[in-house]
Image (cartoon, rainbow, N blue to C red; front, side, top):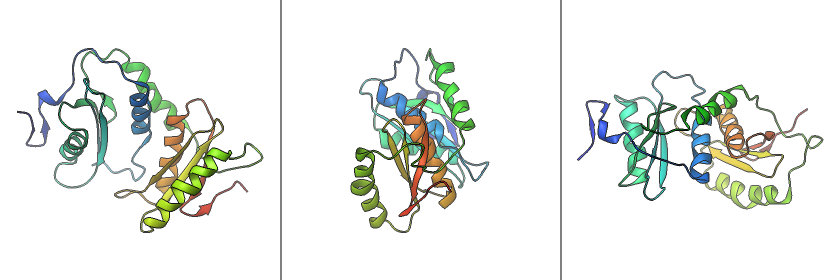
Length: 204
């Protein structure tokens, strides 16, 4: 039986052995890397876990409390289910034997250099699919949960991403979260923030 003891992650929780990430897992991992703590809190901890047999994965960011690292690991494990092991802890790959570590973690550096910008129809226009997702998925979620702050970002190759603020993240943070999630889903493309809550944002 494995678990968390005194705030330390037991060795059995770390993954090991051959592992090849699926396309879906790579996208999720890039999104995980994209989510920095923009409040610069020193007690923010992150965990990304994978089940090597089923392909199931989950990640969680925790802050505050007595043991944010233990909370992040346990929440990610609980969300993932049995048979899941730590792939990454605090934005560092801890899976023993994973061969593409350097290539994947270059993504974090690339994302950190990206500068957020707002929608400019002169640069590229939102396409019909992105607009439909904005109207049929994003807007209903915003209306259903007006207490949180939401942001919607789009890319010039047809991708989109939207997120709700969590924990200590703010109206300003969620714009960065959505922007970086868009970049994670559409590497090498241009992403812009299209809306925050129900307000459309455009370059002046």
